[in-house]
Image (cartoon, rainbow, N blue to C red; front, side, top):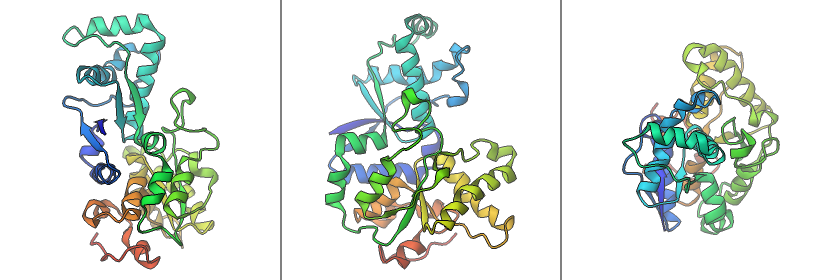
Amino acid sequence: MKILYYPGCTLKTSAKNLEKTAYAITEALGHELVEMQDWNCCGVVASLTTDDLMHHLAPLRNLIHVEDEGEDKVVVLCDMCCNTLKQTNLRVKENPDDLETLNAFMDRENDYKGTVTVYHFLEFLRDEIGFDVIKKMVKNPLNGMKIMPYYGCMLLRPREVAIDDAEDPQIFSELLTALGAEVVDNPFKIECCGSYHTIEEKQLVSKRAYRITNYAVEREADAIMLSCPLCRFNLDVRGKEAEKMFKGYKQIPVYYYTQLIAVALGLDPTVYGFDQHMVDPTLLLKKKGVLQIRKIEI
């Protein structure tokens, strides 16, 4: 089965490893991600204020292009992109007058008919593939690895576009269990990582990263698993910087869920993209005997 895929900007720059592993595991599961022929920046969630209709143009244009390709479904990897596309899609479907205004403004585009459904890649794996199917294909179970799921904000809020329960999400726990890992719960798993404050308020975000990851360490977690590129940067990079701020603190590895699936399925290590991480993720895999791979150079 071919699945239309919207990448967004970050997946083509700082989160190439998220995209690369997603392509690899989709192929291993017998399917194919097909990138949209014409896409633009999603516009990010900061633009989706209810009184600023024009800032919905960017995400709506992407939905139009899904229809232009003759599709009614699109899969998204980036949490922020997915949230943005879902919120815009919901708004125009529930408010025909808004859709009419936006369609009229984009006179060079076809009108959006409202036929598209937006899926997060996690939803695709859970609902279309099934974690039980993935479990049966595991070659390198993550036995002995204690991993804390981290959801952040965009997967679970607002409720209308969430992929799981906002207060007690289970999708990551179910996936980790299927991969053979031990799940370490953390009340900070749905806390904000600091988001774009990382640009101007690095120390503030480092403190937030410390709060989230240190609790995981106190609960004896070996690593953190997440899905958002910005969360990965903040917990991995700003978390590493927090070592200089908090005596005795040692940052733990941060993995994308697609990377851990790729490892568990026994895919070629060249697709993992661990060289983009601040904290070397390979050492833990070697220590736990999950995979024999050389230490990467940071």
